[in-house]
Image (cartoon, rainbow, N blue to C red; front, side, top):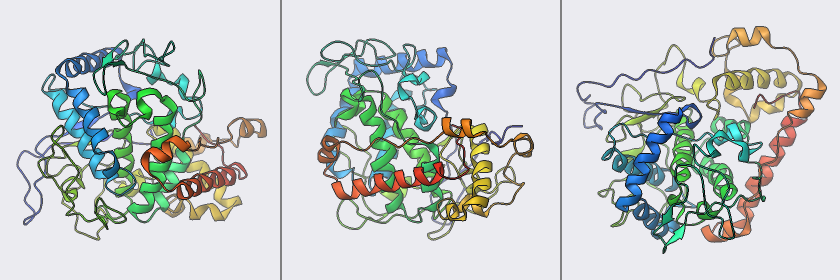
Length: 421
């Protein structure tokens, strides 16, 4: 029995009207996990990207991202900008293929040995760059010449030679989703953690301001957006605080744009809820759109397959079996170390048999000491000085976020918890 029941989204045939509220989407596109794509689906993505490359659209997105870089990083604007940016890229792709949808790359599934990920094979995104210029030679963008900034090969340079330093384990993301009460804190944990780790791990163009040259960028940011949506479903969906583009963040803030990639003056409020306005997509491992547009200060109020949305949002992992074991093993660890409940309040609050697959629980055996040692969580790699300086981040704050992450890793490793990932 699968732990997470597949969600089926039925688009409304008529727009739903909630007073003067946003209109509900008539049709929905479902973003799937990149790990689930077939070889034919990867080839079709490659054909669309080749057309976008020839048309200059990929250069245009890379140029826009570089121009807007300072205004869309290091603040709450990070989330709505990249939600809109990826969707705009997707919409351009659909002019070449109406079925084109950006898959998300759940990097927590590959965090221990990222270089071995099936997403980095010759039939998918390709692996490490080759030669003195670290040119990408395989994958759906293999041997491409990019036009921005100036003609150059698409570069890929892993940050540990032929391997990649560890990324962020799913358990840390799960803790952020459950315990970060405000978007400002969640944004720090995500932007200074998993976001930077994957960019830096791949290196080359991926570690520059013009990272959209590499299609990984859109898959990675689709996953970052999925994590934000999971967080939104566990807290106030319209929470929007912390530093904005100009002063304190406000839902009335215009999302940064320029002539290369224009959003028509769209404001942050217009992209806060999936399934409304023009945000007509959802994820195969996350709650779908709410039946009604939420009010400010309200948490989602709906059931999906008789499971509360927050129960589906306990983990950042997209693997249902691993997700089920993560919750079960975390609950068992609470019995030995109740202080873990502070980091995983969502898991601490659920009942013993509602969201946990009972078959998994029945068949679960305590892991041996040898297995526990083999499955110790790894520390995520810290952000490099180059990356911190390029973004203008507060180095002390970034360092504190990393230390907090490592402390939680230690706490879990010193408990009875055994990671299923």
